[in-house]
Each structure stands twice: as C-alpha cells, then as structure tokens.
Amino acid sequence: MSTPKVAIVTGAGSGIGRACSLALMKAGFSLVLAGRRKDALEETAKQGKDFGKSLVVPSDMTDPASIAAMFAKTMEVFGRLDVIFNNAGMGAPAIPLEDISLAQWQAVVNTNLTGPFLCTQHAFRIMKDQSPQGGRIINNGSISAYAPRPLSSPYTATKHAITGLTRSTALDGRKYNIACGQIDVGNAATEMTERMKGGVPQPRGDMMVEPRMDVQNVADALVFMATRPLDANALFLNIMATQMPFVGRG
Image 1 (tube, rainbow, N blue to C red):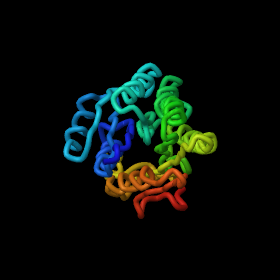
Image 2: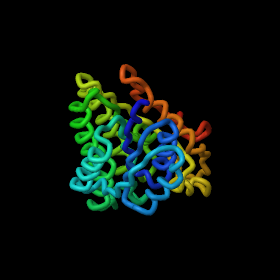
Image 3: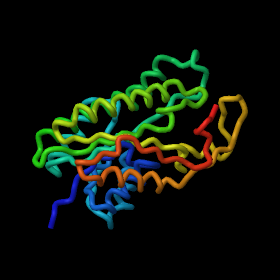
C-alpha cells in the first residue's frame, strides 16, 4: 500500500482552510493543521477523523520561530512534505488609506506576505532534499491580487505581492521538481464574507449585496491543484461567485 502524501494547510481552523483541509484528507492526504487557535484546529481534525490522519500544530504565521517549529514537527511525525497551502491571512480595518497606522500595515504584511515567504523557504528546503525530490506549494492569492476593493490597501498590496512570490517560486523550483501555483478566490461563503449579505462598499461609492458561492467550490479546486502530477502545474486558478462584481468592476 502506498504511503499517503503529506500536506500542510495554514489557517486550517475555519473557512477556506478548514474546507480545504477536509477535502485533502478525503483525497488521501495526511494533514498538518496549522493556525493560531488550537480549539478550532482540533474541531477541523474531529470533522476529518473518518477521512484520514491529521496532526494539530498551533502556529503563529507572524512568528518565525513558531513557523520553524511547525515544519520541524511535520518532519518529526511524517518525514516528508508533498504540499503546502499558504492560506492564513488577514485584513486591516476598512478605513481611509491615509489613516492606516504603521502597526496595522505591518500586521497585514507579516501575516499575508512574510509568513507565506518563510513557509515557502522551509518547504523548499525540505522538498529539494527529500526522496523522491519535489513537492507543491499553493498560495491563496484572492481576487484582490488583481483588483482592489475600496479601503483595502494593505490587503491588496500583500495579495499583489503574493503573485510575485508565486511566479518566483515556480521559476526557482523548476530544477528541484517543486511546483508552485496560486488559487484566487472570490466571495466564498465563510464567516469572513458574512458582511456581504448586508452590503459592502463599491468603487462608485454605493453599497451592494454581493453574491457568494459555497466554499466547497474552493476546496474542490484546491484538491485539483494539489493532486496534479509534478510534471503539470496549475499556475493560477481563479474560482469565484459567478455574479460577483469583478469582471469590469469599478
């Protein structure tokens, strides 16, 4: 019997991270569930207990030592890494750009950009040295990697930067059989997007109730990316609510 592949999902305690973790377990992966809230991670593990093996590792994506410990624990328990989904993220308050504090800016940059960069470094080191060599790194980019929402400069800047990290990682990983891709999600129905049901600001200044889609659509797309053979890569995959304002928005 073949050994299950090993995947790490950051932000695995809720929303997109939980849905993708459960879908990967159903697809045969052993999962490392990473995130800040141990109780939420344990709930994800509980929901997936009939699908496959999981390891709960409370982790802070703004703390380099915590990130390093997460990878060390992964290797201690599983001995290899096949996929990492850099999913954890946050936004700043929706306030005018000129009123955003340096601390608010840095919190978003540390979580959304520096954290995935450090995770990518650790994954790279493991994947290039393991046998068989290689693996897959998937970044959560968001529709904001293409087009901003009003009052979202820290979040939008980090998501644009993630696109650059994805391209660089895909290029630098070629010689080690490391593939890197990006999933760009628009309006998945999670706690984070609940506010859309009451209306959110639009570029022209009005408020609009925005359509959402079942988060399972994201999980299915992520599994498609994660299960490609390493001679194929979904470099960018956009999965979004059909009627959300994106194509031509603004």
